[in-house]
Length: 319
Image (cartoon, rainbow, N blue to C red; front, side, top):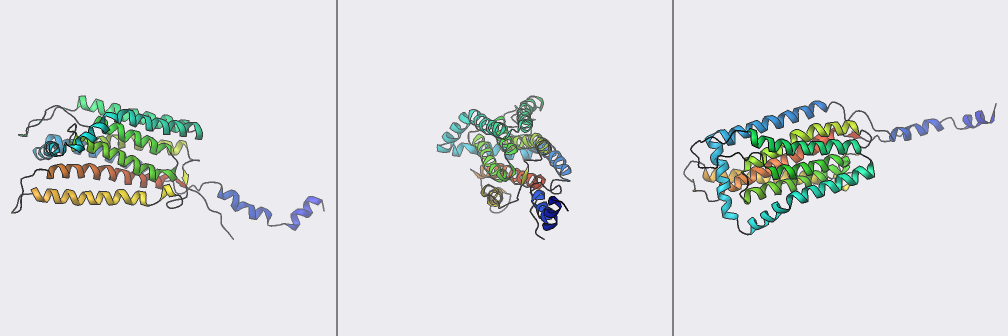
């Protein structure tokens, strides 16, 4: 018997004990499978919701009235809030591009995610171009008895810019950072949308349409990035890192529920009935709540979808 055979016979389970360690270094293949259909359904859902938003808020009398009333009532809050909104909107283009460029460039260079960067930037540019094209292609607002400006303002360009920049950052970071990036980016996009309403630049439907345009472009881009970078799109699940805490999902959910309560209360105050009030700000608060609900709903859905699609890191098994 040779010396090598003796060493092997003395330690018959050495290779067996090392096998789980090598398996732990590889991502499991199960968690990311079957999510392509979900990405497709989500993208089609964004397009359908975009068409529905346009039809109801632009083509119908009720939708025009609600949308325009929220814009008119924004005058009541155009004091200190209006000044702050104006400053945010003035700085928004440069701020959005700067934040997204720094994060995307840093992640690309340090982590060498060149393909992901190209896909994310292309989707970001595509969403903003589509917004400007839609503004020109969508017909002017038809007269439905509502006094309003006839030119088309749907979707909001400022909101598209903010939301697409935030989405590009979301796509580029590792899965464990996406819950935090989703919450911060979603909050930035929502704040931008509300600011355009306060500043009377856009109606609530314009902002919601911008969210949907961004979703229609960023969802396919995200699916491609997950396939182009399977090695780094791996995580341990919620709660394993502070940026992957479930609180970053719970906060937008709670905010959305609070906004839904505000919207319901505001609409009930102006609904036909014994307690009906002449609205001075109810439509504005309802419109603001619609923006918050749409923005945070997209945030939660995106974090959940990408969390489900990212592969789970394998754990060593003890026997």
